[in-house]
Image 1 (cartoon, chains in turn red, yellow, green, blue):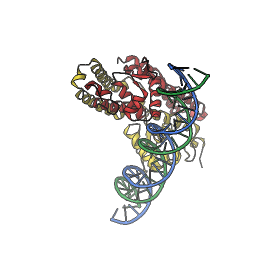
Image 2 (cartoon, chains in turn blue, green, orange, yellow; image 1 turned 135 degrees about the vertical axis):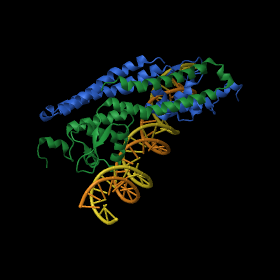
Image 3 (tube, protein in one colour; image 1 turned 135 degrees about the horizontal axis):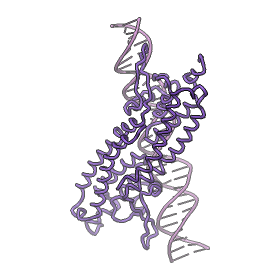
Image 4 (cartoon, protein in one colour; image 1 turned 90 degrees about the horizontal axis):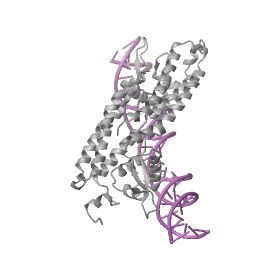
Length: 168
Length: 168
DNA sequence: TGCCAATTTCATTTTTTTTTGAAATAAATG
DNA sequence: CATTTATTTCAAAAAAAAATGAAATTGGCA
């Protein structure tokens, strides 16, 4: 039983409406970035948690499996969207949401987008190699290839710079 | 039977290696944007097609179903990534890839991202309403809400402006 | 060192998304 | 206006992605 009103926010079996909205918010946000539901749920829960939460609390409050929780936290850690903190006398890891979205975007871009852009460049080289002598004389093919190169070049310059613009 | 070498690129049953690379390229690109495989395939094929292609050619060359082709073209049309063109004496629509990626991004942002940001704002209002009197006194909750507001504000300013920067 | 709680892994199940193709619809032609 | 051709729709099937939870592993601590 909760000792007082404030404790209502931390009972295992109950999600406060603020938390529900937060979870909903981040499930959709993460969804835009192609992240699975569980990742958004976990981040949404942590975002409004005053105290760091251990995995088993996350599992019980969100009612998700420990597998999902573990995998979701792994993803969030790799994105630097959460980090764990030490709590004296407790061997469990306790997680805190990183609230500087700039950092979050930055690692998302680096981890999820840039590798694709790198391999895209290789693919364009292969396209150039597979141009026949015939095609090489054609404006059409040369222009389209040029556009693809510009696309990847713009992408690999602009995207990493983007997070620098943000002040959040 | 093809009349000459150039026609090799347009035989139904055969995809030139340039086309294969192009399809691969755009399947992955569209994948990043959360688009299904078929959408990337169709765009990839059209991107290096000198002549506009009717749906049935797309179906036979990519070996996809007419349902996929129809749905994929619908998606691409709504993104302004392709448009159809009139060919005299042929009642089929013939499709051309839009190669100004700036336009493509612009409509992607408007169609796929902005609506989410709009509803995110509503969700934040609901969060404010569900703050208890207790919470309202807490720096913690107020700061987190402030950050969410800044996030959506930055998003809805920056994203539409982004395509303006691009010269592609 | 051996035990035990915490976490990760991964084969399986469930859910969601995408594709398929037949039927319905629309649109041009004779 | 009947017919043929092109396209869309949509229920069912297939494929892909995500969640589950038991077993394996890790790592602290007694």
